[in-house]
Length: 202
Image (cartoon, rainbow, N blue to C red; front, side, top):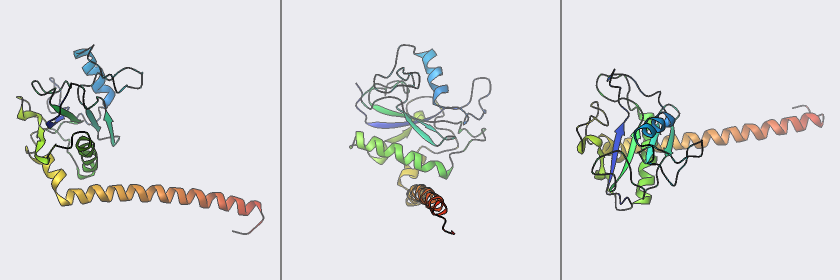
């Protein structure tokens, strides 16, 4: 069982052969296959991948920055496999990419809404979580996660900064407007066809 007291943020980092490699091109399936080789029998009983198997991903959430998607791979009450000593008392979140100084990858402002969405889900599941409970992996391990480009309080800043919140809200407004415009264009297109069928000049 998992009783979250922290949200621990990670990045996928580089590789042993090239620690500076950009890894933003990875996706949740890449992570799933990698963790399957590490922990073949440690699967989620709640969330399944496209093959119908429980995710092997050790993080509760994976943020795919290229596809702008959030994947939940473990239930909040399920033990994670992301931080030794904290897997039964935390929510693990992976931001795909390598955010160490030598890598070209960056956590850009247009990714902030995804970070906000994950935090909102975490707060819903564990209401006692505070903003300061968002910490990097390196708090508990000799790792650089979530990247040496960013301070230990970077995620807290993104979540608590009014400007960052404004970006997240504006992103949601733009997405809503895009959907409304698409629906309106669809309706107008249908009406135009209907009028032409009735021999009206449009």
